[in-house]
Length: 148
Image 1 (cartoon, helix red, strand yellow):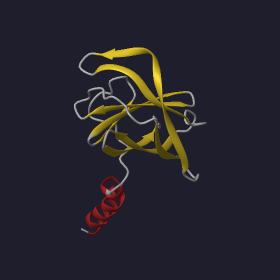
Image 2: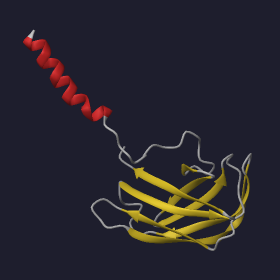
Image 3: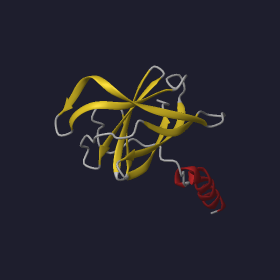
Image 4: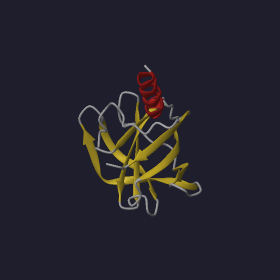
């Protein structure tokens, strides 16, 4: 009997990590990102990032994943790498060289872009971007964990 109780206690202690609450959401979105990046829900928007080297491209959609017309020249936010201080980032609106047409999304003619040195070389980071389109605002949280 003592052995059975001891096994139950050990099992409860070991499984505690399984049931612990993590306030950061590092899970991928349920829907596929229109351009193959990382998609996050940020009501009343959805936002997608694509990373190409040190360049982070940000796209904003409505809740039905339809392209929206950007009206702000810049968006602000911050990024934090493991064991480092938060760094402010600024995304600038940039015209696409060639419009991107995606079925059921629409035509995308511009994006927001920021250069974040080293972002493609770290396995984990938290990035938060303040979205604004028209009179609507939201905060997109990209908790990214690239451990495979």
